[in-house]
Length: 248
Image (tube, rainbow, N blue to C red):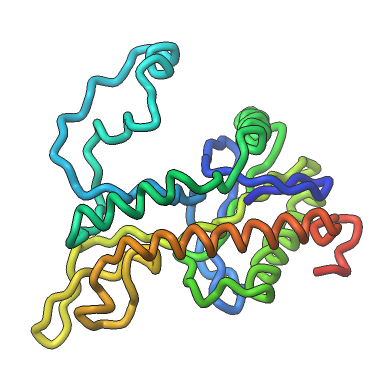
């Protein structure tokens, strides 16, 4: 999620910057640590681990574009993958997700890309913030609005101090998965799959809760769409207008 100093909102899943700051919020919106972040790819970790040789990197951007396809990511080694029990269930969910509308639009991505290019040469400042991982039960209006408020409050200080436009990127509306240092977690002699975020399994330490379930990706899509719709509504309603900080 991003929005410009003028109060308009747009969303994207990319991150490039030479002039940036990042933060992570706690559940009470307190700033807890500094972390360089990117917005999540909902479908980045859908496929089970594959031992595919890494293709040689193209030498030019033209070759990169020529070799790209929506399926080309499958030619790369994929780490941090959940081990789903049934490939058929996974394929069914992925097929269903392919039929859904995209969460962001191409023109939103293009606009952000242009602004990030300006940040890379010092003409803008990139501020990114959000939780380590979202939870399904946090898809509520008050939680979403409070996260947006933190970004707005921080950006107001940065705009005043730097005299630069600030690009705000929120690490939410899809941040339902997280990498782990180990595939398993052990307690009292019992080994279970590590919690990889609500999009994969549940945090409770139990065999059924920790079983990676493809259907959770459908819930992640739904929660992401709800969050984006509410953020866009707040932006269009003037909530993020820096001329009216009384809103936040």
